[in-house]
Length: 312
Length: 312
Image (tube, rainbow over all chains, first blue to last red; front, top):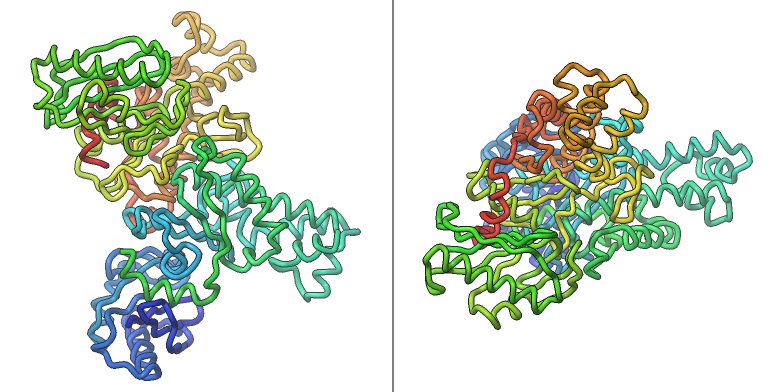
């Protein structure tokens, strides 16, 4: 039995997970960050709560895995993106409250471990998950192990697709994330709306109350040419970064997760597959990677954190 | 004792290499390609020749390593770039002439193995070599092992830095290779010469008999502003792709090899180091990779091929 904790920017979710990746109990709590020590105490309370609700004892749990939005090494947090922590010995702090081993992974790494151990990546040796959300995250299983290099590897959103392009939060310009994230898609939709007052995008956005990651796909499905062009350009940006990754790492499969990946297949995954198959180097060896949709959804974080022991 | 064979587009070089990476004897022969069977026979003759000139018997050689310009898997060649071979069972063909195990590696992979086992990458766990020549090649040691994914990984020259940029031989547009290779540099020098008839680049090119990978650096050293701008732009392109790789893989060190890497440090490596240190994600964890100059030069291919057994 394992405990997997998904540390989000606003909430913590813990799950009690069995050997097959099945979630048996879940507990949640808001993230009320008051420093590393109280953060570790909150994680330990949450772990205790999920053991209680699942009716298992401490001795039945092999370890606690946690997915952290940032860089980790061993039981230490090196850096978190939206929570102010740097060089925090989390396992040490955690064990003051609950004496179980703590395995840490980057949150995108956990998504990859989840899909690889219990989702669409099962059985692969080299596998990548890309999450399309506020940013573009990436988790890589290489040779059957989670890969993070010296700790900050897998920042796949921060490869440039357009030198001197739009500014990215990371300080570079033209990062893949600035074009292929949901945020980047929304920006491209807004630009198209401004240039095309006649486009159905305006009506679809009004119906939904706002422009979001679905607007372009919904308007495109209803035949709007401006929206179709936005979807095509977005697919091309997404495929550009994917082809880069395929050319560097040549995985067996790549899975796309996050809200945008739920777009209709013929508007997103199909054109992306077509571009990657046409442009990637692996076509020369007839080994174009499969491009799949991640299947674990919101559970990927908990399952992946719980399964970290299989990949590190 | 090992034999390392460097298979170039026009020549084959074999070296007898000891446990410390020292080359004890070398034999060469032109590549006169007449099909996979005669190619395997040529490799075997070359291996026999280098054993003879080094005065060692077959039983003293553990294996023959060969660096191939293309993609390999196990003892098979999947594909070669400038020699017409596809799905060739090279080890099997070779053993008909000389019964020794054959280990195959991509040529850039061999450069990486050479520098990692006997050069500037000694002692690292995650290490990348980038070769700047006609193209941009890459070899990656991840977790102490050569990584090539499903066979065609490491094609790092074919990540895009400029969407819809200049056409690349691989079929994409805007590949890193099209800007950061010696070929890309020469194109940028020629463009600058056309735009700046007053530039010293013309005189330097005339003195050398042609524009080559050194022209811009030589004119820049002599104070030419146009050449200095070309060198700066080239360093920025080189740094862009390096930062991409660092963000994905976070290695401990990256070594640059190939002719262009011999440029004066203050005009190339120093500005590249400065850009990577400023832009890479690893700066958040104070772990910016070292950027080094490869040190084995022309021997890297032979030594790396001979040392393949340590990395695969």
